[in-house]
Length: 457
Image (cartoon, rainbow, N blue to C red):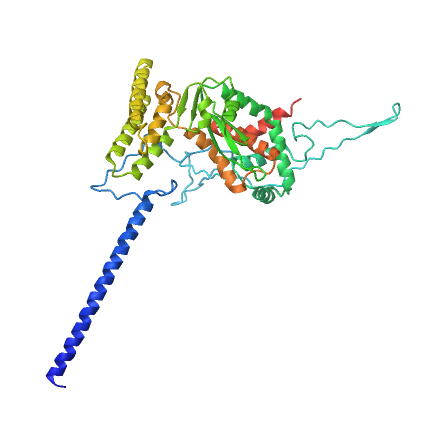
């Protein structure tokens, strides 16, 4: 091959490679454009993540903060229980020289906490022996008084009944697992229908206590209310809670078909004159007494507003100003030195006045992003800061939401109830066990005491 032919071939190959480079550059440009579009979609999706998704924490910048010291209450030895049995371990001779040891002192103690091995259930057969009366010509048998041992004509004692109620309501175990536990630990076989009937009997025995809790809640100074979905025999409904904070805490539950203002009026009753804490559901608007709306819902709405309009300076400024009202109110309510009534009233009036000003700024601005929340500030201006006036009032409705959480978990496990009787039993037992737990009491022993008391003549 001559040099001219070789040169022509190389030039043709060079031109072909240049064209390939141009094609690849165009393809790279197109892919970069698609990648940029995909990144925008991902960023928009991140801004609208569901409320249950927690974002990753950003990495800390700068030097690491020094580790905080533990509190003095945490610097304690291992917890020691009251011993039920003491075993002494003693050396008779010196392990080095085998010389007999004299005198004694306690060197150290090691406790082993364990449970006794499970035993079979205690079956007591009560036999009624009849006697013949020659005068009456009849057999007479004694009437068994077993109210302290069993509810009604059932065969399972009140200790088993209390345990089943605690496992079902307090620990939210399905009936199948309760059957397995009784069989594994106590060799006791209980049918499904018998378990259900046991819970109905506990509800009947504690109905008086449930009614007393509802009346006590209506006489309280502060009441938290909330609702969640609850299906009964495939029909949608709502489980309502009336919760009272404090040492004498109350957790009262009931199931209703709807969530209108008549239900709210029926639950709190006409005698309630205290502070009602709730969210912004319109059904609560009929209550004429002092009302505290949940700031957690309002702050969540402000956060979503700021995320939806990150470039709007007016929206960012307005939302931050509303948040400042909440922060100032909390600073007053949680001050180290308790403020006086005059100071609380002055702070309350100032916060209400500023909330009205913020609401009036955009309440009439149609299609403005802040209009809906601005109207909410004006509509509930007297219901946003009672937590500043009253020390016992919280700024949020988390108490009611936490009270409903066990029922929500039970609903997700079982899907609801199948009959009105099952719903009444579920709500009554939730009221009893929720109240005992909130008061720091042992639910099992409290249920046992309730059953014993209900069996008294």
